[in-house]
Image 1: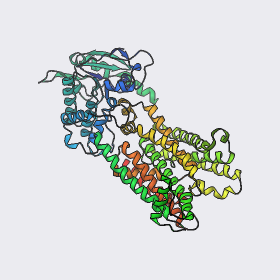
Image 2 (image 1 turned 90 degrees about the horizontal axis):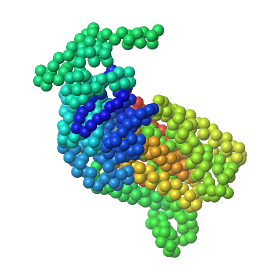
Image 3 (image 1 turned 60 degrees about the vertical axis):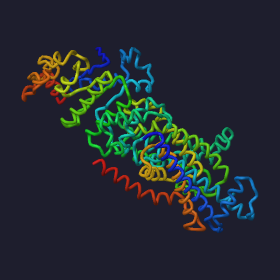
Image 4 (image 1 turned 90 degrees about the vertical axis):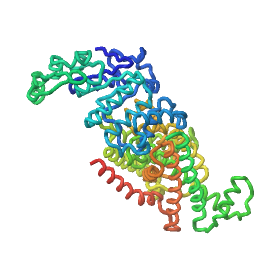
Length: 254
Length: 346
């Protein structure tokens, strides 16, 4: 299995529950070590990077977003500067400028003194992105960033990522559940099944009836988006196929 | 917050609590069976610090400098250590109910200290440092047990953490009583001073032994306070922001156990200081540990100085163990916090 992410592209990682997306993400960001094979960042083995050096290069947005902390928006965004500052309490002169710029870009300026625990899920996700922007990485990992959000906030978050990616030439890897959003925002898609990447390609190549059917065991209806012309999936009730999965469930219970 | 901002707030709060501490210490020294004027206290202390002969009579001088001042100073050091350790434990375990006493670290340290005092093992090697070193080692053992017991699926949960603390505390408390009972029939009457804490009958030398432990622990924790802030986001997120999570956590746990052990080795187990003080201070100063740690320590010092003053004056001429005072305040506070915490989770 092989996956590479380049500067200036958004790669979407798809696959059913339990197909290994999250594990792959944890391997890629160095949280877990691979049993075999290796992960390289800018051509150097990830194990050779110190956690601080690594954090200067890559930022991670976990699925659950920011926890309910008493720190203010500004303080949390400043935490994104941590890898650049050194660990001592007094380090970090001049980082205020970056934080101010990020707060302006992400339109959280008016909330800067509010504690995170008073923010809604959508607002928190925006601050989480601002924190990642303050980190100034070259590579960004997102684990289902839109899971807990309504459609307006889903679009807001993804638009924000897209803008950032385009202005800074960022490399982005997003784990997606939503095939339609993935097709709209990603340059390339990789789709996983049972721990391996089984297909990769452009959205047009991946969002395809045969692929979806093979991986998810669902018979979809694929149409073209009338404006953007990217493929979109329509689901139909009663169209689950996948006989192997049913037998799995049966044998587990039996 | 930018640099000027947090540094400014740190200075402001520190100055306020330092002033309050100095006033409290002077007031505490002047309270007691022999009435001493506030002004005399200052005069004696300044005279000794500047190496001059005071114009005060020798008896007053001895009461202040040999009896009361060392005790008040020691109380301040104990309070600073316990409150500082409590602030670190709370930040690290992301748990508003963590405290050296509730986690059982104090009980472990007390057992270690008792073994050192009554057996004298290790004195030849370590001299005056013997008691705090034993207290530190046993504190680490207690902490290790509590964390192992409460770890479920790699995550430390609040309810199990507190239960584990209760178990470890009960066990080490029993061992402590046993060790003291073995040691001598006279000492068994003093058992409550170990279990409920006391800083009576202390001397200068004990403050001198304790201070370095406190300073090393406190400075270590403060230097890592910005990394400690990131633990609030969760250990994974802290790791993604460049914190070496395992290493940082280990250093902070050891340093705060060191502070606890230093306090326990001179005063026994005084409960709830590390719970109440950081909590109240967090409401005042905000959650930033760069400010919270030092200011909690100063406030803890003020708290213990007053608690000890109460302990030795309420039933004058008899004395209460100081832990009685702190538990009478801390118990209800803990109940209130526990209720708030469980309500907040539903």
